[in-house]
Image (cartoon, rainbow, N blue to C red; front, side):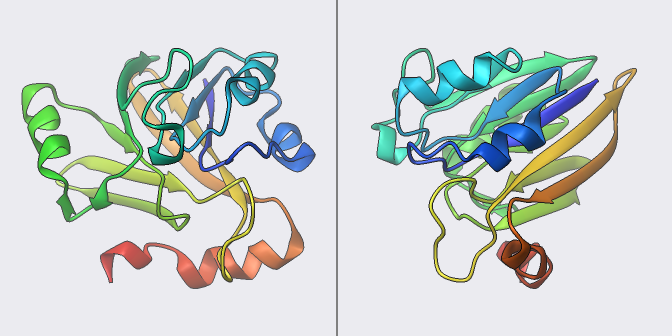
Length: 174
């Protein structure tokens, strides 16, 4: 199963993002959606599980502050603001204590992140919306099979973002 991951669109749904996500079986949006029309466009590609971000007032259509979904046996927890994977916000820590997740998908920082800590993968696709500083513009793709995440990758949405992905990868853990 192919899962597309997108975040921080801020109302801008780039054609390159739509192209990169085509073929996904499910999409995850990690917040700062910027309007229900973004979710409507994404739903033309695949079913969407989304959380709303601070720009959305933590509410955008059926998206709220956090969400859980199980896809092909892999348990996902979505939140917009995580803080840092080594020190998640207390609300996130409590949610993960109540119910374990295999993958935590988050946004907000506009920084790409893909790290496994204590058996949990923390994944941020970076921003797919308006460019911020010298950060990349990208989406993520995850592949799950029989209850395991077997592959993760980032898709740069422009040439400038290819080097930026490498420069900023896992910066939240430095």
